[in-house]
Length: 149
Image 1 (cartoon, rainbow, N blue to C red):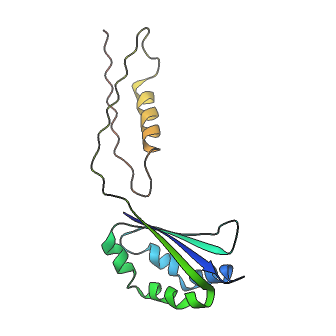
Image 2 (cartoon, one colour):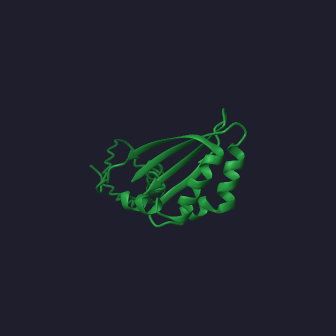
Image 3 (cartoon, helix red, strand yellow):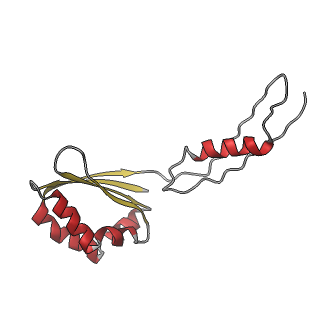
């Protein structure tokens, strides 16, 4: 996955007008609809007149195709009116392989009072929260085995 943090340094007082122009042209919606787009969102920093765009693309091919789209070219045409400088930070997240996590719990004393379903739900909730929902929900299988020792 390729992550872009794009900071637009806007002309004084022009940030909101720039964002309004982007939305009026549908540049944000059209970009989100592209094949290979995982995230395309604008943010307004609390201080200053900058506009932050965070983009996530599946791969380099999807990003290259994005740069050829009419709405991307239109954004480039709009920028000189509103923007003095653009800073692009690029991060590449390496592809990951399938991972299996095994949890073994050994206790002594009385058996656990939670049902297998309660234990399964507890683990599924916590494990799923560790993963980026924009990348996809992990497949989680909890296998319980109770035995007396």
